[in-house]
Image 1 (cartoon, rainbow, N blue to C red):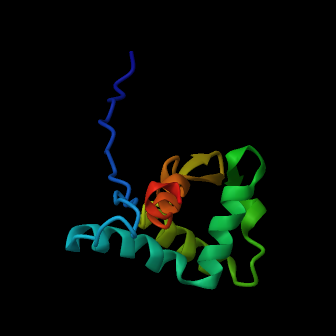
Image 2 (cartoon, helix red, strand yellow):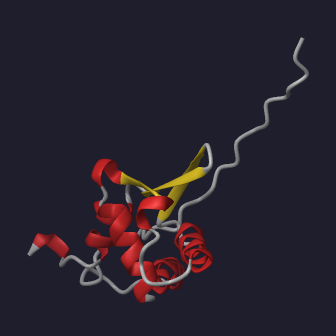
Length: 121
């Protein structure tokens, strides 16, 4: 008989923009704070490159072993991937000894909507 216990899953709130297009109305302080976290994470060239590598990888996810050649050491890659995860831009899943990353489903659409002119013009 197994004595293993099921642990509850933690629900992590993604920090994705929730805002209307910037041209529609001024952002509230809360909306600006949440959006700034995301843009700050993408403000580093290594992080932006890692995000791009994951987003454009075949199948929509990438093993850390496939995206670690960005000109910095492996511990630095891990640091930048953690920053992207903390900002709600990436999620990850451990499979064996490797970690696979994927862009959070609504992130790209939300980023685009925030920077799009209201009314699609």
